[in-house]
Image 1 (cartoon, one colour):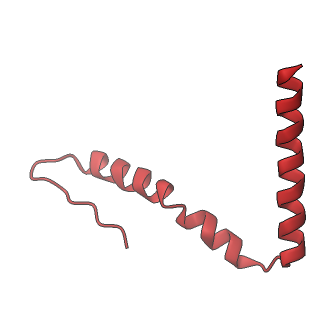
Image 2 (cartoon, one colour; image 1 turned 180 degrees about the vertical axis):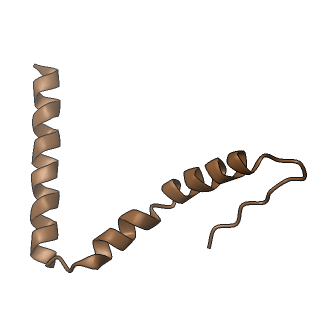
Image 3 (tube, one colour; image 1 turned 90 degrees about the horizontal axis):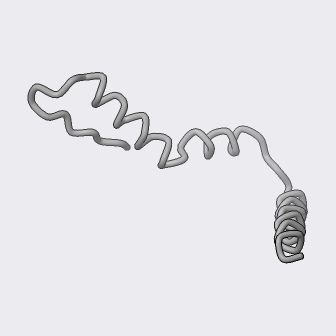
Length: 64
């Protein structure tokens, strides 16, 4: 649960902006979207391998 202390005389817009920033940093929405549907462990592993290969390819291009 996120707690945002609002100081006396603080603008509500500023407090709301701090709340939104803190909410984004906790990755709550990303976790909720991931849990909406089940992905098989093999698919997750395949994605990780593809991502690693892509990043490795970028690094190889950078060194050339």
